[in-house]
Length: 72
Image (tube, rainbow, N blue to C red; front, side, top):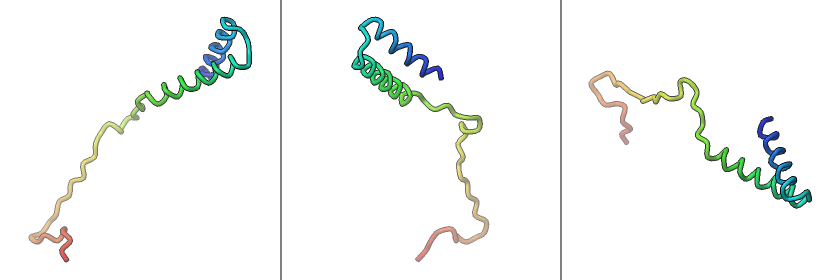
């Protein structure tokens, strides 16, 4: 909701400064969309609790022979 209000305020401000026309509204909406897309792609995702740990798979083979290898 907040990004839409900010986009609307940006369009209204640009129309007050540069004059209202359909070209101006379209151009400002396109520029706001590109700016929003760049901002979204530049943000680093927020990690949730438990996602910071790294799981290392540790295998233990019990016995005297090496049967975990694939011999042919």
